[in-house]
Length: 399
Image (cartoon, rainbow, N blue to C red; front, side, top):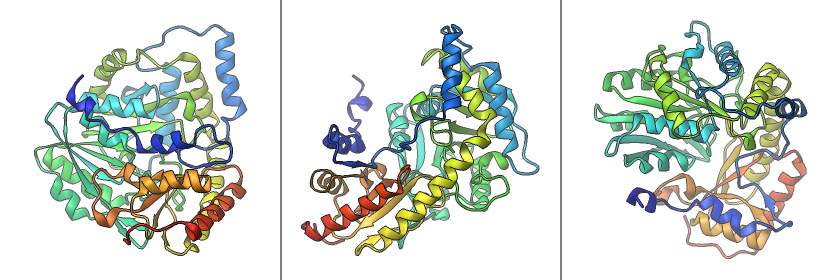
């Protein structure tokens, strides 16, 4: 096998989850998904499609109806003066993961320099590495449980020799979000250096600050249609459709036909019945997403104060996403801590090191808690188990 593939590390999140699989007593908060089932009318749209015999291949770029619905959805959520999104800039993908990998395959050659802002979902550093790229990580800075961007450090890392900048905002796991001025500076700088931007904006709608369009700031609000910008979206989070594997790309129109070829050699197309569900989800988004966001905010506002009251915990409310990313004093090895919590406390969390390749000593000891739970009582019980475990466990070396 290729050395780049052999060098891939097993997912730390999966290592923890495997330790607790099959145990009914474990409160599972390790994966980034809600425990709420997809709305019935979305499921019914897929069932109706199957019942009508739609079991054949579709266009590589997606059903025209879905691409039109996506284009309208994206355009409706742009700020005043932003360029409208046409169907000629849309490709339907088999999930957000597939969309990200397609973008990496389209843009990155072996040896290319790729800058990734971390902490970040591990796939975003692994995917360019699979392509043989030289991945350079720039980290957000923790400050009292919150996370901040050192813009000067990031800009200094992006040179004319940088092929691609990878960003995820709102961010998994920290909840940090790019501001509009920060986006403008990055876009202007990357125009000067000729660097592509790959913006993972799958949490755009899961945003808890007041905005006119109910979304986090997007590069699509500022960019020209032919800017070197690719934006990734997914139905997974905002529409409670994680298992459906349906996402999309927004890109320069000149890139779209070639993306269709790349999709052909990866998945050929997304299943028609899944795409039919996506059409209905977008048509009735106001029946789903606002309720999802309101509930997630209630989950966040339940969990964060409880964690803040635990001695030795550093955490700040996430501006977006569905995670509490917190630091546990005295327990710097987050993978070991997460495994112990599963076995000794029945609490399943994701280790922070999974999101930070080769973290420095000042970035040790973080854990991610997905708070997307239908039952707020599960969050309270989880904090009780964490507190009880801290009172009985032996701390590691101090931070």
